[in-house]
Length: 102
Image (cartoon, rainbow, N blue to C red; front, side, top):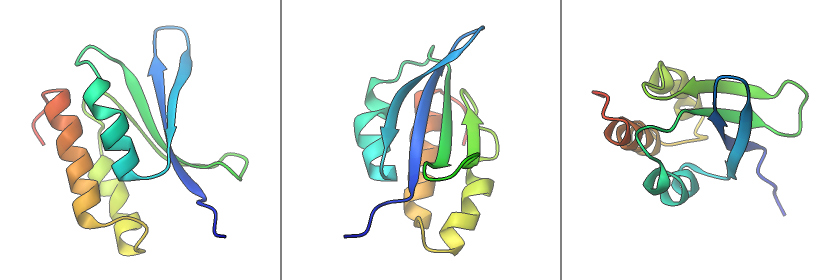
């Protein structure tokens, strides 16, 4: 059995700390389970993590604009970890939810 090594971690942010809202195994899992429940007023951090490594953060993006998300994910599209459609669909869903032009 092959275990997934990369996960999406979503944290709720406030002025003093953060708390994990969820850990997701795929872009589809993230969009299906999280995006619908988000509110435009939520302050979240979306991180791509290797949970089996110390300092395993591969990327981290904050709402509402998730600056450089697509640019950063191009590396994972190039290696086949994610598809173009998955990444652009995620970026579009987040942009629509937080009403930020894509």
